[in-house]
Image (cartoon, rainbow, N blue to C red; front, side):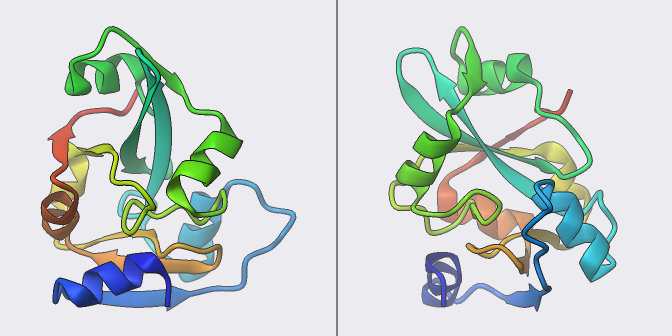
Length: 155
């Protein structure tokens, strides 16, 4: 069990695990998950970390087939600007490996913004905390568990 799954169980949230064989040569983890599991790319979400000014990390959750708008996430978090976080720093702060960073169960709870498109679906898919594992969960449950906000943060 990963910290993400443990958090969902502890809070009695409904979820389903979906496993697939991760190809070590693949670096587009979210799209790989969508393709291997046969899911609509609009419902599969990736977890991205941004560095805010002053030095603070935050989480953005967006569809795997989109890019994050740094301007929009800055607005959502009410900061002047944001930049993509260093990969090593993201792994260190979350406790997860790149390609398996779940928005749930991170070592330290960071400010989180979920793209508002997530609420168009009954459930969405996010990383379960390791490569080759996605979790199907309600966006509302993620929002509640993380005290997250929702905003259009895609480019």
